[in-house]
Length: 164
Image (cartoon, rainbow, N blue to C red; front, side):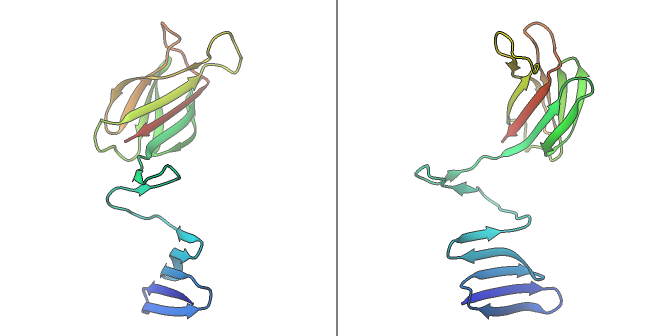
């Protein structure tokens, strides 16, 4: 038997049942948590306090450290964001010098920036991918510089991920 609990703003808490074998928790008629014999589904934006832990076949459950912000942008000409999460914009400070502007501030400046950029579409002798060098961190920005060894260069493709 399935049980549905619906917290309605007009009728209060409503319980209903059928024979599907699931449990559904609803808010105003929209299921936000569903439990069946094959698993659990959560819809909408959910807030979790404490640490999120999971075991994805690694043998034990461990804390998950998620990417707090990321951006994929074009570094040539006027920088243009292709796709992003928790990034409002990119500031072009000069050749190869960019500031990533973070939407929701980091809790502090003790975060990790992982980045890589591609200088051109052409396959040339040597590695055409370069990493950014972080120049400065704040809770809402990270300034990065990419060089070809001696001077700044505008890369074709830039990818930046921030973990905390």
